[in-house]
Image (cartoon, rainbow, N blue to C red; front, side, top):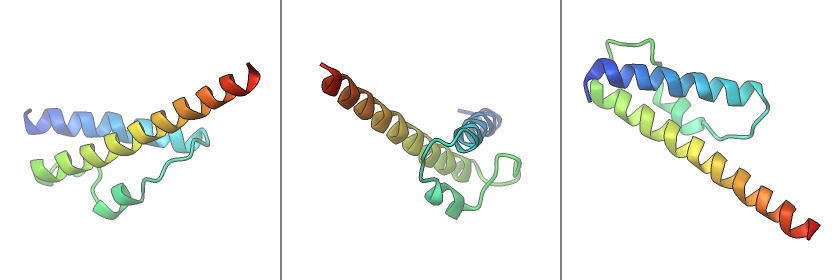
Amino acid sequence: MKKDELVHLHMLLAQFKKYCEESGLKGDFSKYDELGISPFQVHRSKDEHKQAIFVLVTELASMAARDDRMELKKRNKSV
């Protein structure tokens, strides 16, 4: 992937992270925050943006998996 495409993907994921936080969805984005990189920092290296994307995707996927498990538990209790 080209650097500008990675920066664009980083921007989309950062916006989704913000949406989750504003919606009260529980997520641990401390590892992302520790990286200290924003999608607006286009001067940062391609590898730094890749790392930020990886960390964001990992936490967003974990959030989705937790949500699926809770939904499954709710269904099993109502049966």
